[in-house]
Amino acid sequence: MIQKVLIANRGEIALRIVRACREMGIKTLAVYSEADVQSLHVQLADEAICIGGNKSADSYLRADRIISAAEIADVDAIHPGYGFLSENAKFAEQCESCNIKFIGPKSKSIKMMGDKSVAKDTVKKAGVPTVPGSDGPVESESEAVKIARKIGYPVIIKAVAGGGGRGMRIAHNDVSFAKEYHVARGEAEKAFGNGAVYIEKYIEKPRHIEFQILADSHGKTLHLGERDCSVQRRHQKLIEESPSPFLNSDLRKKMGKAAIRAAEAAEYENAGTIEFLVDAKGNYYFIEMNTRIQVEHPVTEEVTGIDLVKQQIMIANGEKLAFDQGDIKFGERHAIECRINAEDPARNFSPSPGTIGLYYAPGGLGVRVDSHAYSGYTIPPYYDSMIGKLICFGPTRKVALERAYRALSEYLIRGIKTTIPLHKAIMADPVFIEGKATTAYMEDFLGRTATDLFS
Image 1 (cartoon, rainbow, N blue to C red):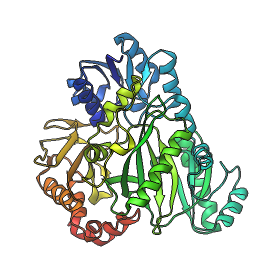
Image 2 (cartoon, helix red, strand yellow):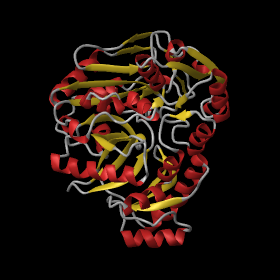
Image 3 (spheres, rainbow, N blue to C red):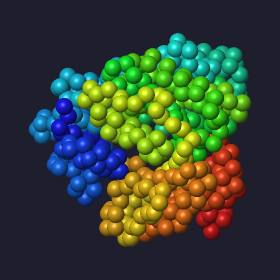
Image 4 (cartoon, rainbow, N blue to C red):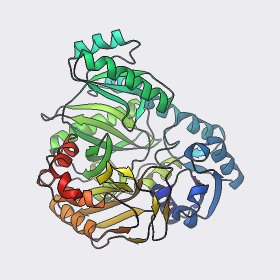
């Protein structure tokens, strides 16, 4: 049984894991960089060990130091959160070889679904629809052009080992393809140490919809419904909601079953997410699997009432899922999450690190804030700019939207720039209110409202 967990992460997700463990009577060890000595998760964990310098490469990405801390503190398990080493198959393998439970899937599943071309082939064999494209990585520009012409422009060039929009380029003809192909390869090599790319048909203005999966080690795999993540900028999600205002019950059932087949094909255990693109006609296509807890997991928690972090720990403990697919109800609640980033929208969303002079989080019925920020806390410049998540929920989408707008009006963070004004404007935008946002929404929204937002 897991009695002590090392949290190999920082910020709000580390704090989220501390809280789940405390409710379960499990001790926690926080590992932290020198820049994070004042972070809340360090202060609230039962123990804390500094593992290196400010930069991620000197701390949170140092598997050797994390494993050493785990052995020194005699922990039973490691929770990787999201980002950093959470989808690193080698790190999961190291944990396994050291008899430390990795609170996530087996290393073989991470490896299988981490290679996008392998993942696509795996789910395709399981009967899950995939976007038309190359059969694996393309080896040369000439081969890639032939495939692009066969699929038909526009096409998207994607890094095999990609994520976060890096190594991803769109081409509309042969001329632009030649340029974007080499740019994508260069970005992929720099970001992931792997310049391999593959080609897919570019689905214009789709919905980005993902399904939350839970799978135990006893053969039970379930889905907990979808999250609509279409509101994003440069492939980075800004707002997530559940249920999607686009899906009907029939399409939800079809996509849910497809998501389960995809997870089962990967022999998956623990929490994971199957991501789809959905076009205007309701055709859906698998794009990737995230083999970890997602930033937006609270949306699903507030809709279903299921604590996903606790479920992760219980599954790692070898326990069976205590509910069946039929026990999970959809449509009784709606939830919306706004990612609060330390960024200045008026300056092309440039990072805004610094010391918070005043921090006041909203509250009230149907409002949840997951954040490690507080008055006097200094946001370091070395990591992702997200400093919190505002999750608002209610019996209907209308109520959730009204609460989100109200809560954003109450949310006060002084001393730095944040995306709070941007989110407030989106909550009042007719296109978003009507549930018509696609992945092209933000470009259109900023074009329509930038002058009003930033004046």
